[in-house]
Image (tube, rainbow, N blue to C red):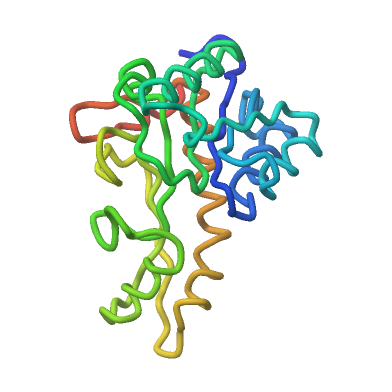
Length: 215
């Protein structure tokens, strides 16, 4: 079991609104998550998510992959930042890069991502943002939702921690479906981080078990 509050790093995109980051920050501040966001790492200094971090006095560090001669150098800079802030858990929030092998190896089963669909549906390379909801509407599914999963070497293939379901109505558009799923993403992500911080998450191969607290 975890014996101290966890330090969380949130990796963000250059253009996202930062709402998943905000949900994590809020949950930490009210004690729903036994931990704190120790650092936010982005690829641009001026993104909305970075502004949200600074508004809560959280270090916001821009590490642009374009500034490095190789992916290995970028990965080394990212790892140094994570180590400097004694990070226990990495949470991806719109982060679009596949993490390097060195980062995955050091943080295996300690990297979470939230995807706006029920994996294995509508996931993989190129399936992000509104594209996911366009695919769901085009396929005519009756339910969609979101998935929180651990991150491995490929897109959206890591062990699933939890999923939440949202009904798809006949008159839904990609935009209305996205709007319905977003708050559910926030709930699911916070819940997954909460049980991780409690030491209740165990990865068994491709499966994740969430243990019930004793007592």
